[in-house]
Amino acid sequence: PLFRSVTKRALVLTQKMAQAEFDGSEHQHMRFNPLRGDWVLVSPHRLKRPWHGKKERAEEKFIPPFDPTNPLSPGVTRPNGKVTPKYEETYVFDDFPALLPQVPAPGPPSHPLMKSAHAAGTCRVMCFHPRSDITLPLMSLEEIQKVIEEWIHQIEDLGKTFKWVQVFENKGEINGCSNPHPHCQVWATSFLPIEPQYEDDNMKKYLQEHGKPMLLDYAELEERSQERVVIQNDDWIVVVPYWALWPFEVVLLPRKRRILRFPDLTGDERKSLASIMKRILIKYDNLFECSFPYSMGWHGAPTGPEAEGKDYSHWQFHAH
Image (cartoon, rainbow, N blue to C red; front, side):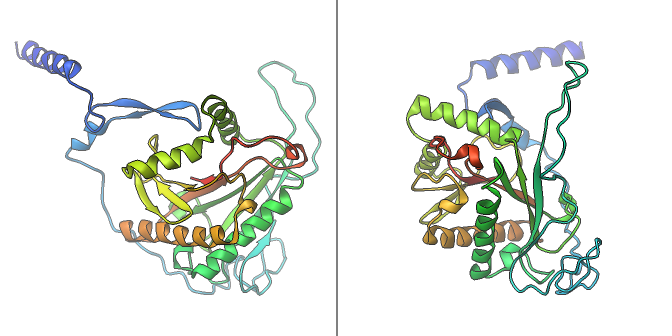
């Protein structure tokens, strides 16, 4: 009898919910990610659970300004025997890369389920600052601008040869970063990785159907509503994407115009990018009361010799 009673009440509740008007802040639903072309399940009513996750203060490890055992510190010998120069701004090197520019191509597959394809490329590590205890939100605007200029230089250099150049930072030990010194990686590949391939296909389709670049349209939409805007300035807007998959996920977008690649930024846009990057990263640090771990990657239109003369007007430069 108790089971039947509970089941009956649950059935009545389910019927009432089915007859109610949809409320996106109350009812589970699917949201479409136009960049990937797939769907995300959203269950807002789960926020009513009494347990919202464990909260504990992160134990900050002491990081000295200079660590003579850290191979990314100026003047320290790296594992391959090379000595890191006594750099004062940014520094780029390519020890132990996951990709090499010249490698043999695999032969024909022995079975349709055992296919391989040629992959060429290169990988570089880029130090942001000579001090090990400095992170991007703690750097001055001028120092962040120098990081941006080096990112642009790397894309211009590697983009002459490779189809895709990915600048990304994984920050924090909990996020898989093995070295606390402020740095990022630059990977260049002869092929278009799966995420940029999704974006290329879907942004092209959106432009064909709607006559406007997807992410420029989206930035204008979010700016009008202000519902998910975190911060913005004259040139950039940071929003929690409508299709967010991760807690505290954001996407950084140009506000005013179509920008295909990092090197296309004007001088003023580079300065305002440094400013908004510092602001959003400070917000993360303050919110979680620690040097917040994160993953961040920059996506722009494909590069390389094949890109010359090709129409990439559907692309919009962004970070997420």
